[in-house]
Length: 249
Image (cartoon, rainbow, N blue to C red; front, top):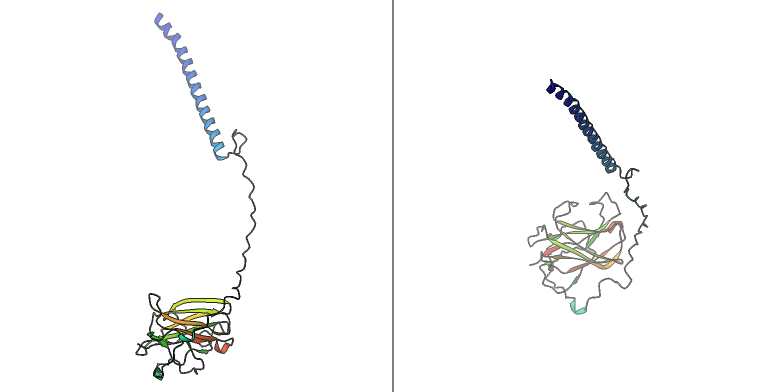
């Protein structure tokens, strides 16, 4: 009987302890949940009033002045076209160096211009007879009308066949502007046959007096012809200059 009374007294104490531990566990879980929610709130919104270490507000964006491009200045008048050739550098044309008429690719043009040669003879290529010559570009560039000026031509081998992939250089001055470009024969498709080269010089016809030239180069950039100087015109009837070359050796 005494043992039964002892166990009856122990059971209320055991229940009280279980209740206390359960209450502490609930309080602990609530505390962890509150702390986690607090940190999540600060992490997602650092500017919340509950954050004791709120970040400083971002400074206002600074408006920088907009840069204005300065037009490029025109070359000074002292940049004149090609210097006058020394008299000793001008060779006397050989009377036997007249090619056969069959090597002229453009029979519809009347040769009225004569090329000016620079340097000594002995180059493997020479200018073809009948060129340089001016004509209208409408037959080859009808879409631009008269708003175009350029130089074109072909390079022929010893048999009179066009040579593709030949490097051609143009240089000199057009007005006060320096001109220097490279191209290859066969790149343009604006002409009826293959093997042509072409340079666009301006968006309108501009007259010049022998200040531009074309020259053939090899793959190493060495000259394969003399510089062939030519004139340009401010006429829509002569806004395309043809300069052809032929192999002579």
